[in-house]
Length: 224
Figure 1 (cartoon, rainbow, N blue to C red):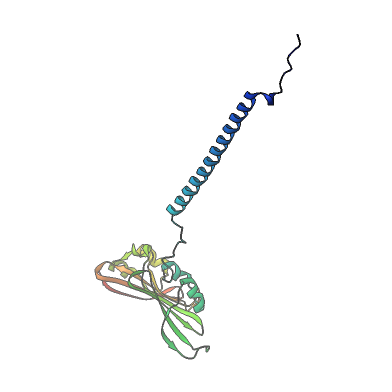
Figure 2 (cartoon, one colour):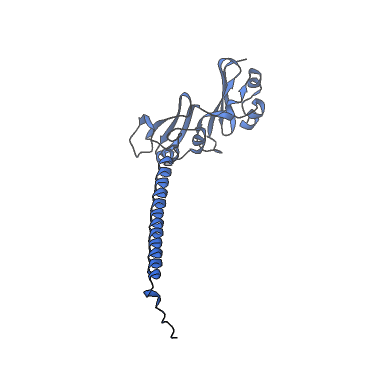
């Protein structure tokens, strides 16, 4: 008996049925994968947009003390500085309150006032002559360390002309408010005035003036 000749696979009906099923499955799976990818990308995009909208844009930190004279700025400003150097430290232009002489001359004198950081009406004044700072003074600028120290009448009486500021601090117990300074430290004409809050009547205080490193004048009001 002769053997039957086997048909090639592509001539068998079940081969084509199986092929159609595989192709359909792949097409279906590929489409689903594509849809899932698109859906995932859409979700990520939405989440990113939501996160960006929810996160506030960071703003540069504002300097609340810019343009205002603080104790630290007051101490940084030194005798001999120009008006421009002072403005750079403070961060704002001052208000010209007095002017004498012609600009550019050695006798030209100008006084500028700036807002101070502290009590109501706190301010600082800077006097320039010949384009250079010759005096600085302040009123009401906050000084936490000096505010902790007060002076009594007994302490005031112990303080004598000729004493140094260090000797005065030992008697009173700490720093005073530097309210005015003229000249360079160490010079014979270097003059500094310190105020202390006093113990006694309302507004009691003491004022001490040093020149060339030595006390030359003391005055008080309402101390007890």
